[in-house]
Image (cartoon, rainbow, N blue to C red; front, side, top):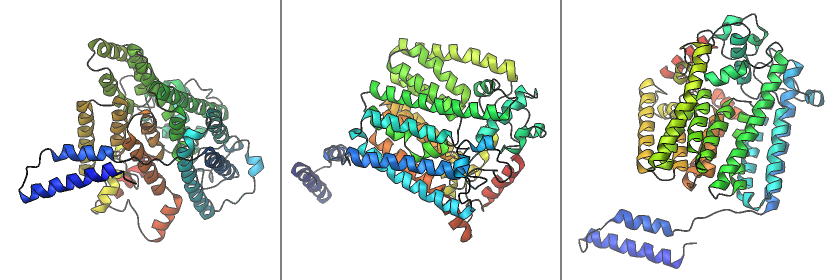
Length: 494
């Protein structure tokens, strides 16, 4: 309930507005008065005790285990291409326990949708109880969830096989993945598993070069080593989130829960074994290094993230804002960035020549409910090139404004990342993990709320049940001219 002082302030402001409207007094700085009133409004926080939090954690683990058991049981809709090829080494060690579970496409689609909703509710309860849970319970639950998901085959998308396809293309067959496509190795056993047969690699040179070190002679060994390393990278990334939260004086338990127990993080990021973690580890390490005033190292380490995925470059100007206006620290960050970039550029030229990752093709593809396509659908046109350019300009304007105002650089980096995600025509669920750590450790409550709303939007729009519902009612988000052009390009690339 509002306090008496808040009520009196509101009444006083209303009286001044009415007097001004009647011409009795001028209206001096109404925005300042309104901002002061807003500051006095109580901020509601839902806080639960440890018991609801423990029940929610148990629910998350049971849902994750159920998802893994059903996905390993045999060819099914949860694992792409499993109806074509699904060897035992892909399904994992739990398939012997889950053999015989239902695999009807509609049963699994609706069941998966229900599991996601339950996990989302459990996530909300855990967030509300995070500050009452012990460190041992929170950390132990996160580790156990990672162990459970490690037993799963890739969920929803098979990007892990695309990584291996490009690695084998270069390391085994001597072809540059930036100038050749996986279709060039159609005789390789990996060909049956991959998604993009005719897409030049969009992945950064450091990740691509590192993937050459896998034991590519054995597809099964390469697959499991990459899965294990990805899960370890996820845990390392979360350890950095914990460290950054402590350095900034935040509750590390809440930060860990906010990031690691998000259903998108668990199901799509960890369960899909995506290489975003190899970008996020050095990116968060750069943040941690800056917080302990190791500025040159922060700039150098950030370049490792950029060499995995170029989008990490967005963090660099905010690192500079974080030390503004101390010239010595600014100089050290830039020096570190150059020191890190030079050997990475040399490595890329040595292995791949002057070819660059193919970021163009996927940037022109549309997903059903990417924000530009969703906005375009309201006007009946979908994600047209003109609308995509308009979104890009809006994102640039947001980033420039955030840099100009120079407030909390961590939170502003999160806002900039969220703005970037909202411009992407090709929006994948696990991209949410780009903004989640910055929202978790930053000071902006609004950014955390916006990240949660974006999470809700992603989960709802990617629910299999929604896709079935829309299809049954003849609604196809890619039926516009722009959507048809995107679908035609996708057919050329797969």
